[in-house]
Image (cartoon, rainbow, N blue to C red; front, top):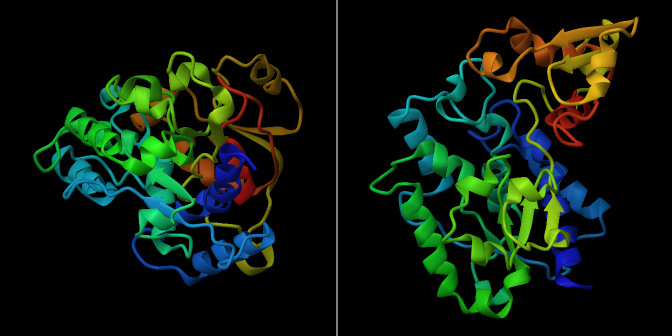
Length: 318
């Protein structure tokens, strides 16, 4: 088994439940249901605690962990909690929408609780290099360091690692935003190029590394909408599926399929409009998005600017 497929076999176990941990308040308190789900998922993929597969996560510098970055973001830049979906995410001020782009946070928290984690790099089958690029660039200056400082730290840490020098392809790098090409700085890209890249779209323009081997990418899910409660069971919740077929999203994207949806009879449209308007809270439909998803029997998921979308995972969870 080559290293890339082996990395996939492990990280699919960890990342396939990203869609659930973004919901509710699971990032504040330990959740037994989530732990059981992780172990069940591992069992169902022919993995168990005795198969010897362990993952070592390189440590962030003191004061620069994913939790530190989130705290700085909220305190210093006065943002909402990036782990939850909001209609008031300040539009273009930050150039992104972190609630759907921080798989880096949820994968870290899952690994912290996983029986796969090891604190001994000599025992590791794989290595997780979590530079948290989306959180880092959005947080900006935090506890004496800015995004460029943190990128330099990760560069120097990897260059000093004998494990990286010997097994770079066994190192998994994560970035989950269309801005990865720019927020991952040039000083780090030559090292990233040697690693296995986890991203939600296998898109050369998003990765932005010259001559990068796209076969070294591992596809991970988008983070699902935080207000869609995980794996809803209708008999227990009493949710009524009021809409047979819906489309929740913007009709103003590049896909021609979306233009046709507006003319199909029987489709309930929850048009969230222009994405920048959504981020500034001008679209009430955005606030209703999660409720409409949960009240629909079928959710249309046409391609957008790219083949897949967050909407797919929202529909799965709803």
